[in-house]
Image 1 (cartoon, rainbow, N blue to C red):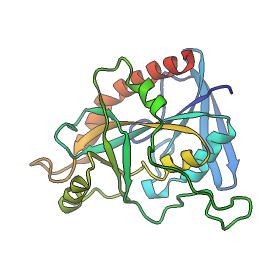
Image 2: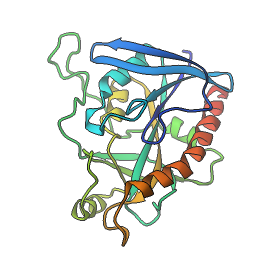
Image 3: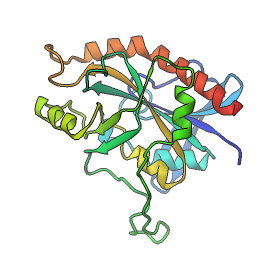
Length: 246
């Protein structure tokens, strides 16, 4: 089977300057429309989807995750690298750190989180194994030769769009979470439902609530995003070349 890579860009990554010869697509799916671009990174075909839209306008709980993942499947994508801006909970997850999570805990609610809930005969009830939510082979591509990336982290996916309280972060830490974000689920499980390989590249943009003496401000978050997104894009370009050379 021919491989095709997709990048899902999160907060701070609504477009990639490294992606050339762009073609915009509006894809109709059974779950709504999705807008994405196809283009080339170093002559390799890549699909790019801005999770929050371009410009950034969709709150985490308003993203149509089902339409996005289904549209990528319709475009014959086989693998997804999802970029997420996250808060750091444990000591090693300082602002500016980039990590590749290996586990996730879902604290979100009220989202359309499955294609196959049995309410439509076209999409009969289906259970998936989610023991390992991220595809190891794709994680290894991201991590290879990248000594500045942290391997292994537990991603706590919260509802948003507000940031968390200190008590909530304390609970997440007790549950084993290293980072906290708002868009990790149901994106990862939907990809698994339609047999798409999926890995997360997470940029820590702020200390989570209570992990710093200062209040969290959006100015500080966007400063870290601006400083870190160039490195994120360089990692993606490197991973894309490795993906297509394997």
